[in-house]
Image 1 (cartoon, rainbow, N blue to C red):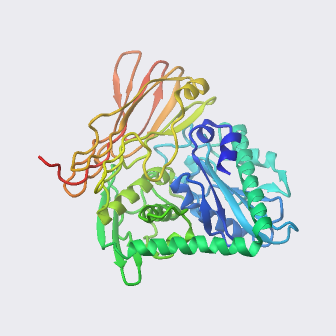
Image 2: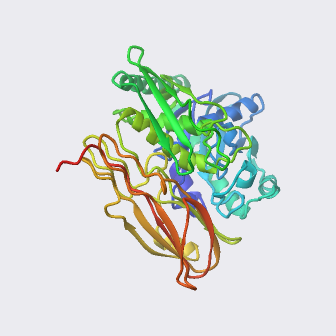
Amino acid sequence: MGITLQNTAYSANIKERLDFSCAIFDQNGNLVANAPHVPVHLGSMAESVKSIIARRKGTMRKGDAYMLNDPYNGGTHLPDITVVTPVFDNDGKQILFYVASRGHHADIGGKTPGSMPPDSHSIDEEGVLIDNFQLLSKGRLKEQEIISLLTSCEYPARNPKQNLADLKAQLAANEKGVHELLKTVQNFGFDVVLAYMKHVQDNAEEQVRQVLGVLANGEFVQKMDNGSEIRVKLEIDRERRSAIIDFSGTSQQHTGNFNAPYSITRAAVLYVFRTLVDMDIPMNEGCARPLKLIVPQGSLLSPVYPAAVVAGNVEVSQCIVDALYGALGIMAASQGTMNNVTFGNDNYQYYETICGGAGAGEGFNGASAVHTHMTNSRLTDPEVLEWRFPVLLDSFSIRRGSGGEGKWQGGDGVERRIRFLEPMTAAILANHHQVPPFGLKGGKTGQRGRAWVERYQDRSLVILKSTDKTEMNTNDVLVICTPGGGGYGKKQD
């Protein structure tokens, strides 16, 4: 499914950066297996699938497909559009499974090109909200209805034809999933396939329970640049091999967009506990069975509509992961951000996340210049970036020494310099420009991130905040320095 989506997508964001995910689900919408795509997508997609199942029950027909991006129904943020396809038997009477693909679209409207506005205060300012929309009806693509949907709100999509092209690619990916699942059923029988779907989830549950049997209680507070805090307390029941993950005391819903919908919080928790499992298993619903989450409603980890959420998926999710690793005492903070950069105008819209340093842990140094934790996308190749957009990549290098010192060294961040060849709006949505990524067990913090603009006209420097936007003129250079990871353990003299 993933290869099909990559090969048929139009936008650089999906085709080159691979900012998408594909997965299969059982009859109830529980995640069974996924390709090694983006963790923040994979741990939350089941909520979107279950939302469609609940609201379309009894009305689905063979050849139908649905889409949504609603963060309050299992979505992440508005650019991430999920396409859900039911898998019917050959007679078209019984739904056997579901397949879904989630792609980050280059633009879905909103206040700034690229749909990642740093200054949004409500969901309406972030683009087109899609909930329970029928994309395909008995095999017919509802093309005019889709265009109308994308262009009819206060901040419409800037390039709906590009959205449509990527949606067709997602449909093609889902169709590949449908075909392969039906072929598997034909070869092994429905009962066997269903049984193995259950085995996969049961095995994942057992693997997580084995991990819980050796973990200890812990708590941690992760502070963010905007003053918000994520508080987590882990209560491990070794006898029952279960855990309570309690986020009580976390800051209230943010007035800006640093709010992570509950599905994101759940995805981050699943990711952390999946990484503690040694066996090579796909993340699925079984991983969640031994875990109980306590997340206060109205907090920044379970915001209430119409809260803005664009940074929740990309930034808050990273902080949740670091807070959990801190509570477990396993790993220092990674760069703790995805360093989201968008730029564009009416003709071009581009989005990328920039790599940084990974945190160190017992027995290993943090990796340098990598995407960490909840993101698993690439950076567009320089040749493709410069071919498709009026920019030049002046330089892209590792920030040597930006990782925190320790017995085990934190990974280094990077410096990325982008020169603009025509006027565009640029925006950054990041974290850890004020609060450094923490070290553990005596390890030092990683260096904080920085960003600025070098103006060509008067040679001036404009310092950017971690969430900021600016107008770029011809030959201006945007410079992004990403944080290093924290060190682990005291460095020996």
